[in-house]
Length: 584
Image 1 (tube, helix red, strand yellow):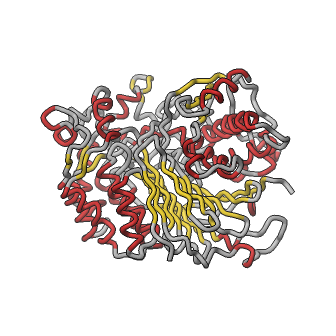
Image 2 (image 1 turned 90 degrees about the horizontal axis):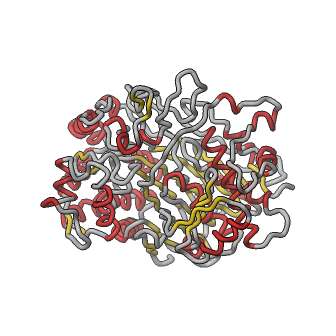
Image 3 (image 1 turned 180 degrees about the horizontal axis):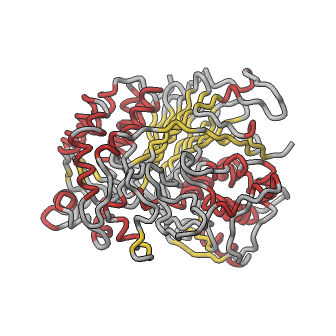
């Protein structure tokens, strides 16, 4: 039997039950072999990007809340204390596991392009707008999806009353919180490049008296509290209809480079429940989110890595295999992934075991520039790669991730974003609006083949966000992981998976291990973390084009379920923490 096998030709169902997946080599469902863990006795855990958010999550869990309740409460707080990374003006993906049934559900709350969006809206006189100019434009604002994501997930999984989920954020917004080092550090950097210190509302909030907020400053946001109170008391129509929606549209339409977003676009927003895809990696099952997410890249990287380490290998050889698995998977992801409601994404082909095995044989020479493969040619003798044009997407990291398991063993892996730091720098109701439309391929070449991630009305841009869970062969949850980091997210998340499952690291050691990002011709290695320098030297000696980096922008939050305890980790590169409750 192959060591890597995609289960049942992938699990293309919106709510995937592990109890329904055939065991390897079998032809029938085996309920007993895939039973969930109904004897959960390990307590609860939350790993989030800020101590205030972790406290909000634990407050919900201590009240008997579901992991989804905790995630909503935590994220509402993050929109206040970590506005550079995410908030209710952005979007997100939530992967939810129900321990009592073994069911997995993917709630897609990605931002949506306005109905007036065009494929060339970031082009001027045949030239693409520079990223900074596009980033700070009204054109960059898509319909926010997070608030609707809250509602979709709460309707399906929540236990606590809806209004209760927003109380920690409301209290903190009114009482105030101390500005963290990371928030204070970002402000002057962004001001030197964008309009955060020029737009009147954001200038007054982040640069009082003309000076950027300093570490320890007690910052209050009564406007945000008022917005959350409306959402808590009136439901999500308070956000997607009426005064807030009108204000969002107005802010997006303002100069410079005003966009076409309308209140009607906002009112029409809907969360999508999408396929959960699972694949085997040795004796484990990796389950993750489908496009427009890049979760499928986790299955691709793990499978390619497995083939590339078939022979006995040193740890250095394994690192090189990890690099090449990324190079191959990224090239395919970049070429084929987009909004599945608008373009054909050949995900079943890309994750087919036969294609992954063949793709591993296309391992590029260390100094070569990786290019995409063609699964249609490999699997059926029918080339498909030319149906898509070359990708030109640039993706910047302004994102957050949280991993949560509740007292009943239910789990959430949630990644949320407003795209670049502080989004579009446009402010409504105490929160920032996203610049997510710059996650599309902004360059349009007339007459060429369509790009998978091209802009279009109502489309959702491709995202690198990859909330992921891992299960054992009995269907019991082993790992919850995910990270922010723009285009580097697939690399960061796959590092955490392979480090735990193959390199036998603890959750924290896996997170702390140097980040290695291999997309395109360069291999970035984090040399400010041991043994990063040795890794960079070895890869360079093997012929790879290595770029040494003192730091990497990951924000991994990982939970590993050990036989008698929960092993949690927060990324020291940001301000995350892990909090737990006692076992029942």
